[in-house]
Image 1 (cartoon, one colour):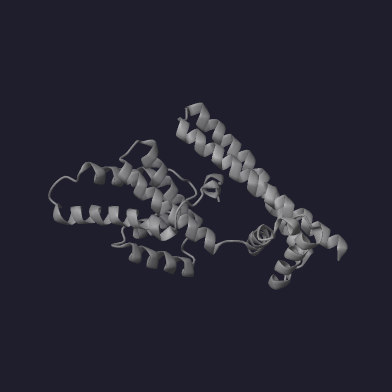
Image 2 (cartoon, helix red, strand yellow; image 1 turned 120 degrees about the horizontal axis):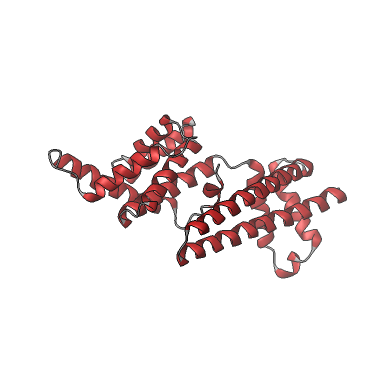
Length: 250
């Protein structure tokens, strides 16, 4: 998955994000049905052009991925879209390419300065698809890291400073998951290596964006992403240190 997709964060419940997108699509389809013999309005032209431009953009996205994305985009209701996405998740057709198609369409609309309604709809659908894809493809060890972080956060201040209490949290999580400390550490090291590679890609993307010019709002978003990435890596290193301690004391 691209660094840009990995660094996008969810800001609202997933179902609430898909509603505006589906409502916008329903309006688009209703307009087409009632006015087939007349030119489409500017918003419809913008949406169609954004999708057409995006389809040529990502080289790693198959035509099948765009077809599946359009099937979701053209759903009659949020419920129909959710059902389609659930079905794609079950049969494996909700691929990274589908999410990349959604991202490319959204970015195309954004870069061309198209209407805020169009951009909001495409952004909402992209975030919904990204969330569903990530939920369906979370590596088991990554879920265990999240469980360890949650367990450590639930400790009171005194226990949080106690090595034995920290070790107990990690041991309990691994015992319940039936994963050895050695395997867990190997996965953490793999994740850290991947994060280091992503950091380099992220820095290059940010440098390119700044060279092209970014406004104050985008700079704030970049700063937030930098902080979140740093916090995630710091948490990973904390869990790694505790796991190493558990391994040495086993």
